[in-house]
Length: 120
Image (tube, rainbow, N blue to C red; front, side, top):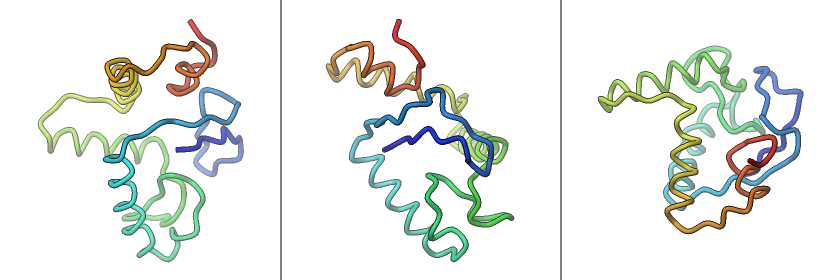
């Protein structure tokens, strides 16, 4: 996934880094995103958007999903799955999975992937 770090998002979202970065995702995530794109393409207002996630089920259709909408969706899914989770936890889960998979801990690449502004 490519994060361009742009400042003109209609939902006001900002990346932690101003530099473009690539966020590695596995085949399973790619498959789920492909399914999402199929649903998204069925909503005319959303089909041509260049942002990752857009409103598909409530107005304004096709606009970049706001943080409150994304959080509500996440909360509903967590409740359905009977787990306690917050969106921010996904960053930590991804980092843990990369470490377990043996991804090198190069500070620049690793920190850029999880969205930190500087290495630690």
